[in-house]
Image (cartoon, rainbow, N blue to C red; front, side, top):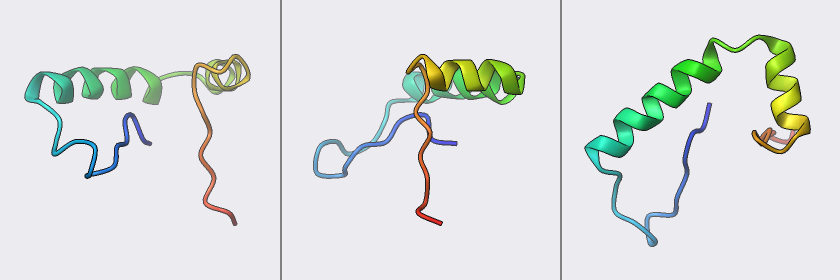
Length: 53
């Protein structure tokens, strides 16, 4: 699961408070029901990233 991605030439790192917030977001989405995840993707709230396989 990716919560936030950035190029290292754009930013060095994330702050501790940002990391905590991202962990909270991840916990929420990891506990979500499959139907909620599908709805979030359909509504553009989440973006599915595929590896090309």
